[in-house]
Amino acid sequence: MHFDVAVTGGLLVDPDWGTLAGSLGIKDGRIAAVLAPGERLSADEEIDATGLVVMPGVIDPHTHLGYAQSFEADLETETRSAALGGVTTVMSFYRQYKGAEPAPYDELPELIASVDEKSTVDVALHFGMLAESQVRQIPKYADAGVRSHKFYMAYRGADGATVGMVNECDDGLLLEGLRLLGESGGVACVHAENTDIVNRTMRQVRESGATGLRAWSDARPAFAEAENIQRVAFFAERVDATVYLVHIGSSESLEAAKRVRGTGGKVWVETCPHYLTHTYDSEVGSLAKINPPVRTAEDVEAMWRGLIDGDVDTVGTDHCAVPLERKQGDIWSAAAGFPGMATTLPVLLSEGHHRRGMSLQRIAQVLSGNAASIFGMPAKGNLRVGADADLVLCDLDAERVVDHETLGGSSAYSILDGRTLRGWPVRTLLRGRTVAVDGEVVGEPGGRFLAR
Image (cartoon, rainbow, N blue to C red):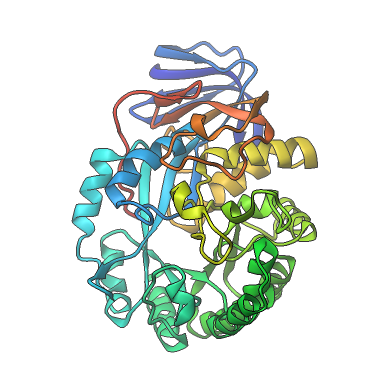
């Protein structure tokens, strides 16, 4: 067979079958052959991957396009940053208001058109379930290809004002949403923090005069998250729903998740790269303000153990293109959130593979294969024949000092600025077409909306 593209001579890494020295043949945007070393093949374009690792493109299941700037602007800037980091599929939590009130997602056709016009990589959506008017539309959204939704158990009352959110999702509305998702086979993504506890502890810690990342951790204590995990899992079991716990970053919360999984709950666990790299003693200060907060060095190591051992299923960035000026001031006035898509793979290679012995196959699982399976994208996240030829070629020995100016995106900082990481993507392919190479985005936007 003659191929459109051949990727030759690399070490192939698949989440299912592990590693294999060989080549890939690509035709019509899909993997058409997996070939052993030395097998002859012909192609219009040959990419020499000798000395490189070839992995499925990263799937980032947790981003917030449209949070700090418009959805359309984030599509242009942040998906370019994604491509530079080896991310070929971005899943974004989208929230919609009409005036000050949460509103149904009637503008989905316009969002799809924007993705198809402006995105460098493929984009799928989760919708934020903030009100009854949105929850009752869950079956309609499933028919349109949006089959996962986010429920914010935080951000009611004063807590909501900290992020500019109007959120009407109490336990009763959560239960209704879980029921509808259970019936449709969808996934409930849950931000599990007890908002009543957080409203009180935040006020108490602020009134004490404390500041800094440690104060932010005290204001949003890990036990408030752990309690909520158990309550959400109890509701989900009652209506046979699948729960995806977003941004788990503490040992206490991870232990709560393990307990509910141990009783048969259909629960998936996501962590984020900042919970693998930063603590509340980090010198970056309010730049690393995030919800839930970064915690202790012991929590960092607990999350790494969970990631390597299988207690944590995925890594999502919680990427928000918050501008630098909104990160200024003390911990109480700085905005929460920061970018991260361009450095997730280097963090896993450097801190996971090189420093802690995490296997390349496990990295492919937590960065690609598991998210594809959880969220219903069978053509993504693997190197099987017939899969989309979304690939990232990595130089495991490349060492670079993180510099936000080389990462794309619109935010003039990275919380990793100045840190040396070993292992970087050198080429990213989306359906067989190179979209980034040697630190540069190439070609015109060619991303697509992914209906699931």
